[in-house]
Length: 250
Image (cartoon, rainbow, N blue to C red):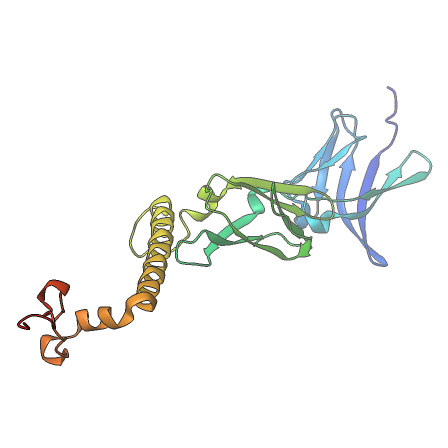
């Protein structure tokens, strides 16, 4: 019977200057995992030839140096491996919020951030007309646009990956803007435009009134005064009613 290439493999992980035994692999046909550390329970798998140890459901704290002490027939061998654990920042981690900065005048404050990611993330906003510099923790962009179909993109960059979310102003602002009148945003924007036109019309009317007052201010003042406060005006003298000084003279 051919002897096994090795008897046992003792796997350990270095923690500072110390190490902990995480698993013992016993050579059999097939190979089997004899025991494992409680922190790695149900997360270790060994190949049939005992040459592979697979660590599943990785955690950040799993990163480190792992050593395999291989017990041979007459000697031992040692192999070390460095495990790096990197987590990809998913797009779903990005949190987009919108605050209306005016009473329906199309000024918005957009905030891009995250809540659960453990680690440093740089954020920035990108659009066709606006952009922000990268900021750590969250990014704020304030813009004025009455086009609710304007497309904006939030990017979050961690140490190992980049996540992004692209939305329209309608998607990110419609459900989060306070609207006491319960009117849709497009209706508020239309009302804002109508209000601006009415304001311009009132200003134009005031200018016309002032110009008329400058031309005939006294007559307009008399016209708007009550009858009791008006001064009696002298009767108009018509040329035909004036007496001829020569009449009655012989």
